[in-house]
Image 1 (cartoon, helix red, strand yellow):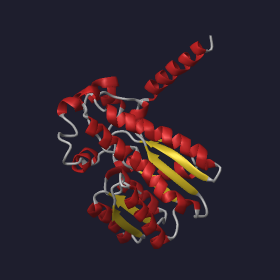
Image 2: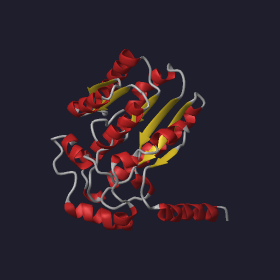
Image 3: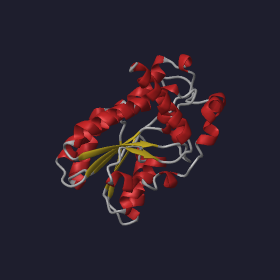
Image 4: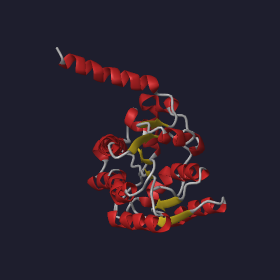
Length: 267
């Protein structure tokens, strides 16, 4: 589990631990990853923790080896990672774009690449969960780099599901909306010091909330609420898992526009 140090990742860990699964808690903040692991252990479970930068594939390969040494198998892999960089698309620097894409896209690719061999050697049910974002389904202004990166995660995940399905490995895409978490704080802490600027401003937040009625479509939930159906949906090998949010009508409108474009192409 990457991003296990806090927020959604820590809540996902608790869900898996509650059904007796051993946990490998990974996070760029090794101390927080250890806190997550300690919470599992204090509850009678098994867990180890490692500080890992998901942009570093060799570090993830080391984590996969650590998982194999500790527990010998991997039945569920969660690539739960996402740094946020607010800003109008024409204002973001190339360095900011590369940082977001390296972490949010390549971090997922690196995680799967590092652990896939261990999953293939594991018997029983096997599942991969990739954290996308509700912003893929309903984009908002001033979060374009994040949206683009999560679109890429969805495309990668849908293709991965096709390629691994014949091996009996299920792949699901998770679409979380706003939650009570450290997402913005952890993004700022993770942003390289040689890339200037903050990850957000109040102006950017206001633009994002006002675009497409995001202030009403996405109520802010607890991470425990967001993960309430996770185990059932993964066990059922459902391709898409929406955590919460009231934006179904906007999604229907978008899909209808796509279908209309398809119909026009048949004329």
